[in-house]
Image 1 (cartoon, helix red, strand yellow):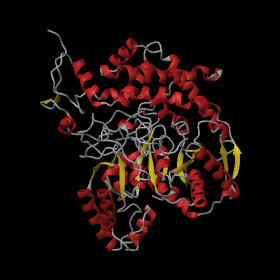
Image 2: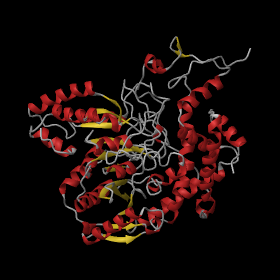
Image 3: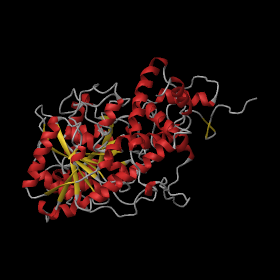
Image 4: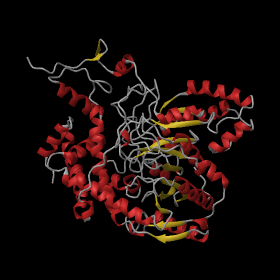
Length: 93
Length: 487
């Protein structure tokens, strides 16, 4: 069973916050889903699948196919300075 | 122009060629319907001005008697997950409600290169996460068959646009059934091709190893036309298969195939429980019909498909949690200008405000499944059981050409009916998810209506890259059932 502490931890890792009034229903639904997913425990995986790895996907040459102009790239950003994305200072004084 | 109720791509193209009607008059017909049916909420945005200019260009070309591609001047709707340069692309989310695309998706580019005219962008579940189009930030789409019911999802706007005469055809995406289930709920044809057939470039990512684009149409032939148009290798999508575009439409037109050429498998073990009695009865009648028309029917066993939903809700949210980490309010997407203490708080603020509840739930499910201590138990186990499902299909395709089942275990449900029960919403995809996990082509064909006049779809799944035979069998079934939209 998932408890409130765990849900808060996962939400932090996900960079999300859940509204206080929705926490309880969220935990309930989340727990039900996890419980359903645990169905997989009963699946008997044959030995030959033991060494199965996540597939490596192909990569292409690191070359430019279609180039976007910097002005276009930054146009969806709320805060741009000199064609750079501007963010809050990340170094403490 | 001939005011026939429903017009397929083939019929419109023939009308253009014989000059019975013009691209402008057809466009006018669809925009009239769109503007009179705004309450269906099938579209998030429409491109009337651009479309009119394009249609005028094609009016002239047809008038001059030019031989043009079959898609020339054909209006098409696109799910709002495909980027169209300089246009809004919202993916049904508040997060992207102001996002203007910088470039064209390959799907859009291929369609317009062949002369198709984009009518606009259709509504969808937020980031394609849902089976009812109710999670859209822009409100739910209504099912044209019954306005109190959902059109299915996530490509619900696309399906409703075709069933509601708001487009002759549409392109949607399917990660766990998002083309086929809404096609079934709206009484249209919906095809999910083999994974990698259609480029994902410029298609907003949900679960990259499962996402695949495909057509929603009024006929099997129209699906073939659109698959031929949008398929083919694209160097900008690394999982795109190194294959030329398909040539299914030409093969279908030859008409040199019959039910006797094919063996259809039925996974009875999956259909024992959980099926609406009306769906079950109608499906059994369909099977008898197909038998008497000459198809050979055999039972196949897919014992591990019962794990499909559980696997899916580990793999898809895991990939989503990674794919959606890009939305932080800095480069694009919702950006709140309230002052916060740190950059981290800024991310949390934007993501919490920009994402809806279902998207948050899936991101967190994925984060949980991938988090320290759980990775082996969840993600790795899911990958291993997924392989067992693929092996089951491999074995089945040694003796049958395709596998038939209902597309959805249930009829279109009422708006709000599953709102507070996400698990029951997830389980409605139990019959469609296995094809995504095994990367197989799969199609939904409408075959009958329920006693309350709601459409029921049959799903046919083929072996990898076997779209051509899948479409041939579908075309034979289409002729056999002679389904008509009766709204």
